[in-house]
Every structure is written in structure tokens, then in C-alpha cells.
Image 1 (cartoon, rainbow, N blue to C red):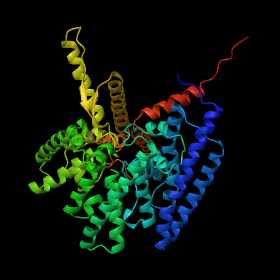
Image 2 (tube, helix red, strand yellow):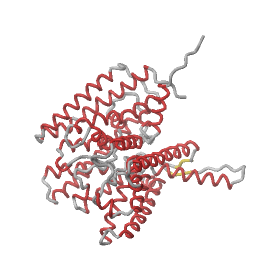
Image 3 (cartoon, helix red, strand yellow):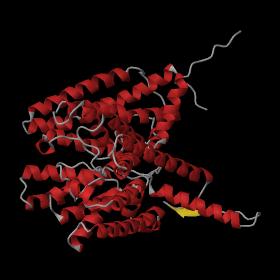
Image 4 (cartoon, helix red, strand yellow):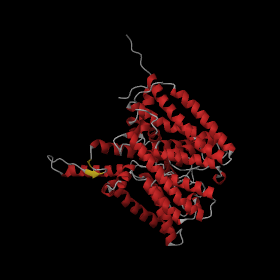
Length: 504
């Protein structure tokens, strides 16, 4: 049963939010140093100011509880739920002062998109954005892709308060028995993959004629965005700017790798390839990609927007991979996406974004695991109906070992899936109410709630502020997979409910 927030709860939650905010202020040293080294003094001064503000507020919050103890489940949910939006407000400060956003709300949408790895952008004149500001956008992707709590736990910022926070961010798979060692291993793998991809893409950029400085930063940023399934790009044309099929192939490999559970990735690296290929998420994802690609190709063939088969395959396969991993990269222009891609093609991409990638990965969406468990639950129901009353029906599946489907697992999967669908529908209705056509409104709502990042053009400079707020909430809720957010709201509402006086 949910209890009210006590003064003690508020102090504990405030303390841990302060710890996160203090740490977050230190990450602003990265764009600050980039600005200083490249002589971008104005951007560097903004990040110094924003870091100072965040550090002061974070330090003040940390004083709310001098000796923090273990967090209970409800406190952990509150810390996790609030941390994503609190840090987004802090991250938006230097962006809002850059002159590349129409308002602080625009900068907040960009910061939320960056931290939740949605990747939809509302920046003005990105081609003339400073290296420091661009670096900050991709630092947010790296931190958000791994998970704010995962990064904090890997650095030991929370002391003994680990398990509750780790699971409250939607993670339950422990690669190692110790949670801190697990998150450090995840961090190490990410650094190795991003570093290796940066070297490969650096060669491509140098061959294409980029200056060494531009080649390095473009390679680093694209590598981070691809593996973290983020979607930000340093140009307004996304990956279409590079006109490189080789770069697109590397990015597709990175996106698919990022959409695979870290637990499976580690097992495969240890030689346990059987666990990888037998996993029901991997199998489901493989067949889903084939079906989605065929459906998109058929839709694009009917529209006749591409001149040859090779161009059709290149654009179609890339867009399916980008959508299914909820990255949001494009190798087509925004005009092509809204004119050449038919309504059917957009709806196919929306369905792919809605499903998303694997659980325990950097991808968003409903996740293959949940849909697989729901399908298994349906099978179990049918078997129970057909079986004799005395028979005991059990359904198994293979995910990091053979498991038996339980009622609780099936119920949890159905609940979260239903919440995603409700969010898609509500966001679509809000978009339609603002005057946008139904297909575009559905596409945009699914992209926001699934953290998919592809945009039909609704998210742009000058969009209605009320719709902007709805999309920010959708991105936030989708990244928390709704359960944490709903639990936080219930807790707050319970706390605000007036207490009845009891007579003697």
C-alpha cells in the first residue's frame, strides 16, 4: 500500500537528486574543455555558468540528508523518475543561452530528447553550432543511453543504495552477481565499441575530405549516437549529409548492436553463442526486421518515389533498422520522408518504432521481450482451454537460459504494453487537436513515446508550446517505461491528499 511522502522521504530523495545533479554538473566540463581548447570562449563560459548553477543546487540538496542510508523501493522509484526531468532542466540551461533555440522550452525539449535518446531535434541553424554545444548534445546521448542511474552506480556515487535504483530504471538483467560490477562492465563495453567505431568512421571522413578536426568530432558523435540508439546528428541532413554507403553500413551495425541486450552481448563475447542465437528476443527481432523491411519495400514500390532498386533497398533497409532500434537516423531528406514515403510506409515505420529493440539494451519502445511474453501467454491460455482440467500447462521460453512463463511476468508485460499504446493514442489525439493530419500525428506520437526520434515534421521551431510539453512528457514517460512514472505520480497524489481529522 502506498504511504505518504514523509519529511524523511523528501530529505532522502532530495539528497540523492543532489548527488546526481552534482555529478551532472561535472559532465559539463567536457563541452567546457572542448570550447576552451578550440577557442570557443562564449560557449565555454555558458557551460561554466551552467555547471556552477547545477553544482550549487546539487550541493544544497545533498545537505538535506547528511548520512544517507539504503533506499526503499518507493524512494528509489521517486529518485529515478525525478532525476530524468531534473537533469533535463539543468542540461537545457547552456543550450537555451546559445541562440540556437527559440525559447527555454525548445532547449528543454532538446535536452529531454538527448537524455532519453529520442534524438528528435528542434535546433536552429545546426550547421553553425559550436563544437562545444554539439559535444554537449552527444554527451547527453552517452549518459542517457547507458542510463543516468547506471552511470552513477558505475562511479559508486550511491554507496550501498544499488539494487533498488538499478531495477527502478527498467533494468533487471545482472550480467555479474554484483550490480556495481555489472554496470561497470556495461560502461566498459560501451567505451570500447564507441572508440573502435570512431576510428573506423574517422578513416571514412578523412577519405571524404573532412579536415582532421571535423573528421574526429563527426566520427565520435555519429558513433555515440548510433550505438546509444540516440539519433542526434551534427547536421540538419542527418546521415544523408555524408553520402557514404560504407558509413551507413557501419552505423547499421552499431545500431543493431546497441539494440541487443548487454547481457547477451557479453555472453556472446565469452563464446556462449548458443545463448545468443537461441534467445527468443533475437529470433523475434530477426523475423520482425524481415517482415517490416518487406512491408516497407512494398509500400515504397507502390509510391514510386525511388528511381532504381538499389536506391530503394539502401534507403528502405536503413530506415527500417533506424526505426526498429529507435535511433532516428535518416538517409533520406525530411521532404522525402513526408512526400515520397506514403502513408502506409510511415505507418510501417511507426509500428517498427513502437516495438523497439531488446530489453536491457539502449533501445526504446515496447521491447521484443514484452511482446514475446504476451504471445507466450496467449499460447498458454489456449493450451489451458484445450487441455483437460487435471492437466498442468506450462509455457517455457529461452532468455539467458530456459525459463517458465509466470503469471506475474505476463501481467507486467501486458500492463506496460497497454500503457505504451495508451500514450501513443493520447499523443496522437493531441496532435490531431492541434490541426495536424492523423498519419503525421500518429507517427510523431509513437516516435516520442518510444524514443524513436524520426519526425514527420511536426517537431520544429515554432511548433505549439502545448504540444511541445506533451511530447516532452511522452519522451520522459517512455524512457521510464511508464511504471516508474505512474508509481511516482500515485505517490505524489497520495501525499497531497488531505488528512481527515479524527475526533476524540
